[in-house]
Image (cartoon, rainbow, N blue to C red):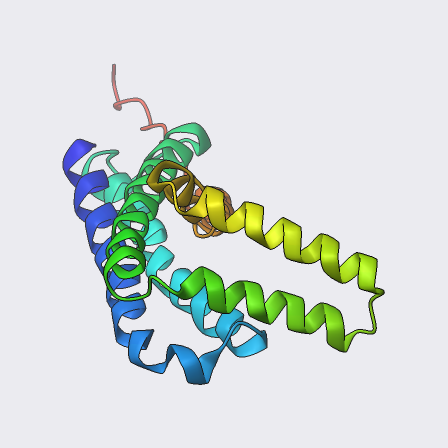
Length: 180
């Protein structure tokens, strides 16, 4: 199981990291709104399709064509964890080396949205304080990594559940040998 989980997890993680690095030059054009979410989560779903293929590979190559839901879920979630960790590593590299102003831009975006929605001065000030606290937390690599892990992992969890349900397959009982 270890070889399949690591192989498919690393390939999935490399895909997510590759998508991240590929979209980096276009970040200002993509933005934080709808298109940023569409591009980000679409790339995650595409990368997490390797969860499905990893479970199927395990079922066919190790399970002899059969796999329980529990084993399929275990294989899939381990692939998703490895892939999500790769995503975190890629983001840490991007954030601390190429986009140190990311939180400033994000905070300005969130505050701008609050202003555009007609929020009161108190609500806007509360949002400013919230963003300042978030920026301070986000500057800590541990919290940065924890928040970043929570971006792709739920997607991987959902794809793992769906894949485990689709791919589970009971072992066929062989008919008794004739004349026994």
